Image: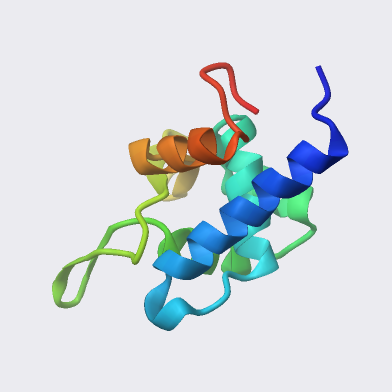
Length: 123
């Protein structure tokens, strides 16, 4: 069932407002951040899938995911402004290759439900 355009615009507006409000110094989220978040809301995705869907390079995808995912850095656990995504290692046949799958965190699911862009079966 397709959403009416007005409802979609209202939901997107609410999503952007929430992301901007909860970002460091109220900075505007990048279009790529929003696009990745929406693609992952449909279903969990690998970096390769996100590259193809967004027509963006792996490094850009990694930076976007890093801004929304807790990670271990040089100074210990680094938490994002909003923990919206989870990143997990996926087993690959290639030795030494690391492949990641990105999914919505509980906070990400709640945010998407709140703005009307997510259900238990995906977008």
